[in-house]
Image (cartoon, rainbow, N blue to C red; front, side, top):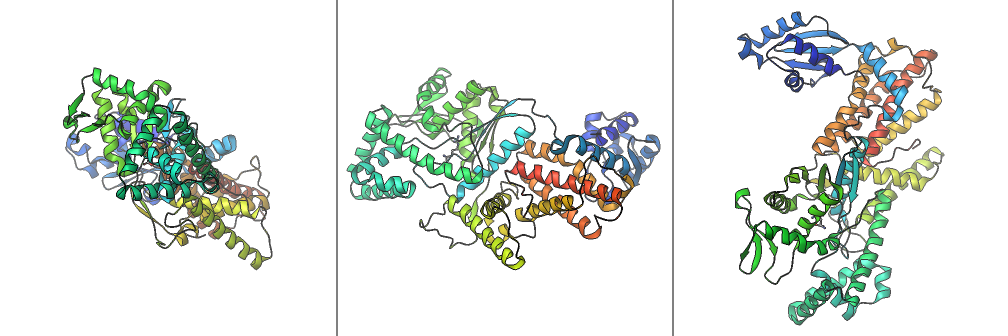
Length: 570
Ligand code: ARG
């Protein structure tokens, strides 16, 4: 597509000797309101150079610029030069590209096949996969989709929490009180029960702790019985988790969890020793991180055991060696900020300059508005239950609608799932990730307002409109038909899609896309409510349908980048 910004930048570059093209590009703004043009160039910083007032500079620049390609008007507004894109030109560009590329409209190959490691979800085995895990899971999945779309080669990793001394406790508790049948039937809650029980009984009976430590030691030494039990806990847990991933339509390239890296730890520790960064402190091996203004990090405890951080060091080294990544992203809650600061500082201290390519994408907390939202499984809110409840609630709405209209939808349960789970994901991805948010059923599942169902509904409405109007992608176009403020706004919005995706990936913020989709849907609904789309005039009809098709296409692509389906009928 034509690059309007590029055209403006090179014209300005020709007119202003004092600034280079890159600087001008960075200075160019998108005005908050469309009436102020499509791009604006502020002249404040030039005032010093030219020793003139910004307003005067703007006026003179306009004279100097003369014609700028594909710009129909340049307006001086105080210290700003506002550029208005030639509306016909934009309409032709957008329509042409949509016609030619369809769902690939606006797709740009930023990634050039470079390798990105995306780690997310990573629940702990034998523990509930609860509502708190939704954030890393959904944000990470969306980021993976965004990077893939932009031409990166993404490896998605579920770094399962499947190692640690607690498995000594688990094994011990199981051997004392466990019943395999009961566990097979309802694995996680039963394993949790055992774990809670042993912790409680150990308060009175510390012997249990020694036994458990011994079991962990046997696990570390690859004792057959210990490994078999651990493997079983892992298998039944993963089977549970995978059911949730299936509901969410989320897949991983690898489920290598913490346990995988235990064998690699001695090597990592050895490297730290060689580089002289491990020091002894009260019997433990630590890394001093004073120069990073961070507290010292324990690598090996005084009893000789390694910890979570040690495994992460081994993991990072392994990932660099295995994937030679261009970027390595960890989608993990902000509670672990210090952990990742320490991890990256240690890698830096080890001399691995590639640590600059590692990023902790952190996020705030989710809480439930409906504090009473307890499930049949007790106090913990299982993610699976939330997803099922969302699906049930949407299904109720669909049934109610069927009763009112007498019209039944096809595959009601599947549709309810796409809408219900889509709504949960949409809400999740609606805000800047670092903000805490409150999960609210009513808002999430509402069909109006800034919600998943609202945009899905807009998408389905356009689908039926296209069908009704017999839209032809190759059909006739009357470009003058789009010479109207709202139509122009929609075209400019569609044109801006690729930049939104690029920005989302640069900041690792899927919500740029969520907001974009909502804005696009709102604009379309305004247009739809004010402009008759299907009329007697076939050419004009097809043109308006083309604009609608553009909106539909980008809602669909945008939703797919969030991991949300776009039903044709609703
Ligand atoms: N399993 C951890 C937890 O639930 C998250 C793992 C984060 N990833 C990492 N590489 N440390 O808190």
